[in-house]
Image (cartoon, rainbow, N blue to C red; front, side, top):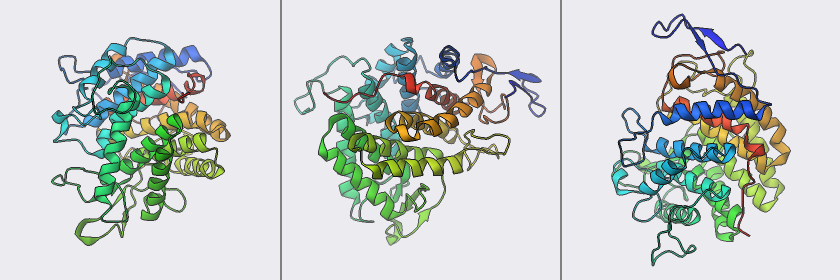
Amino acid sequence: MSCSIQLTVLAVFAATALCLNLDSSNQTSIKQAAATIAGGLYTYHNTSSTAGLFNQPEPWFWWLSGAGWTALIDYTVYTNDTTYVSDIHSALSQNLGANYDFAPAEQSGWEANDDQVYWVYSALTAMEYGFPALSCETSPNNNIGNCTNSWQAVAVHAFEDFVTRWNIDSQTCGGGLKWQYDPTANGWTYKNAVSNGGFFQTAARLARYTGNQTYTDWATKVWDWSITAGLVGSEYHVFDGTSDGDGANCSSVDHDEWSYNIASYLHGAAHMYAHTNDSMWETIVASLIDTANATFFTPYSNATGIMYEQMCEKQALCSTDQSSFKGSLANWMGKTAVLVPSVSQRIMTLLEASARGAAASCSGDNSTCGTKWYVGGFDGQVGFGQELSALDAVLSVLVTDAPKLAVLA
């Protein structure tokens, strides 16, 4: 792939934008590119804030800050660069909330189930990689180890939130987690894939890590409901959501497909296979990979195996959050390659092409990254989501050499 592109329609940028060169077969090259992009991501950190958040334009996408810190946990683990550990600890501790479940009062006007789960992924990732713990806090109501703010305890507290809300929401559609958990919020009637996929993934990751049957049962329950409700289609397309509004009882499905939705279910299914060794889950993983490949890769015939957001990217219409979705797919495909060896080679071939394209999209001050990874350079579309997706893509090709995802002894 060429490492420059003529930006004929972007006069505000230099006529030619040079990009990061990445040799996907060379660990040093990958880590150097990751360090540069991580530095670019960190420039969005609001250092004057005590809330541990990243600067983003309105409307406020709090969930993306959680995704950003999770990416920096992966970066730390994969590269052994401890630059961001103190800030990661500070941000996560400041957003735990009174119940240690990533539902802080400060975000009560914004937070929905999908927002919360993207912060929970940081605790799950830290738990699985043995990331340094937060300074221990205790609570008489905690029944998960000694510290109520241990990574495992935080993930369990959130899991319990999702169980409670699922039970409340089960009066319609035979189950399913709603997008919003505040009945007064817009979207209260919507049961969406990213929330249910997040619940499924949280349960599956806790099941693999702890071996506790309760989590296994809930993961299976959420997966089965997602099939019955039509969020996961017969050919493993994952659709955006369904509704119980106006008595609809989830009778129709919004068939929009976004990369983070299929990614949420893929990573959960990979953990279920690693936990159970059941060939059913291996088949599900392989089918989800097939569909992800067909839907979110190869935007043009001369861009084989490069990831793109098919709903908005070609038209340059991706919003702040939509520009980040590819990062979830890259991240969780990489970890799936570790958890399910039979799909590893297929996944890594796709991720290596995407990582090279993502690096090639990075240019400008602080190696600002663009949206389109298939144009051979920087396309001038910038933002936190673009930086996060590029970092996740580059990190994904380091995953096979990362520390093993842990389980409790």
